[in-house]
Image (cartoon, rainbow, N blue to C red; front, side, top):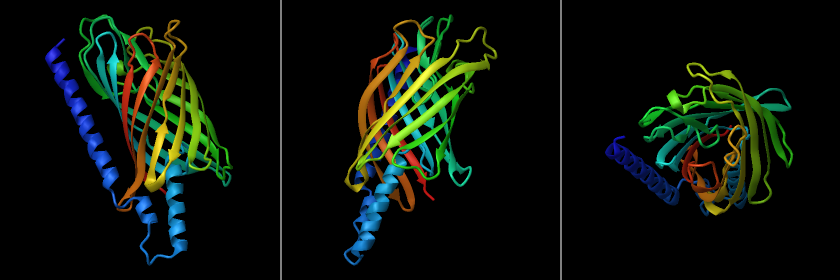
Length: 321
């Protein structure tokens, strides 16, 4: 493989990620149009108005952290994963994750969630197993190739759809249930080449300053394999738990690692279990509501030659009713 091109491409992605993260964190720190700043009303504003704005700010922050909130949102989630495969392949995944709620009846809503991964993967050597596709919130695709040089690749990964049916007026425990469909839209080796379907469930609480819950799904292949002989079977569980602690001025601390179990993998290579933490801020740019965060996760348990570190930056546009 062309080592010079590989390292220059990797360096370019690292630099671009750091620039985006630094500029965004600077914007978070200096933004004077945040919800929290709106809540700190001028002296002439009444105490009642101040209390209402503070309450609205807290409600917006919790809605941003609720996977099944009745609010249109468009998250852009940038993931840098390191040390994929024996040659330490560098993988970048941009997950575009629109959420579109719909009212089914007076008592029930349908929350439509999609994950559209755009993937860059560095060059790999012959015969190695490399993690591709969307590594966060979607399937983790493993592949082995007989050719001598995989070369780098950039393109669309497999799209995931989740549809959660939820109560229109939830109580203290918020829940949703519905299907998850994995669609083999991925380009070349960025796809499992299988349609996969299974159930998905979400549940969460919002006590005090906290938002705590989990999203879990398991999918099985139901067909596909176009253009590929004997594609790998799909039987995979995905569990994302999340704990958020909300603070003043729109800031929060959060952990939301994605645990996966590939039941088709060899013994000892089924689980990927990361741990990590990060933080962010919910604020406004003009009239536009925004949620931005930066996180780091380390996979304590992972398949052989799978990525160990993931650095994640998210930027979400929110459109409340």
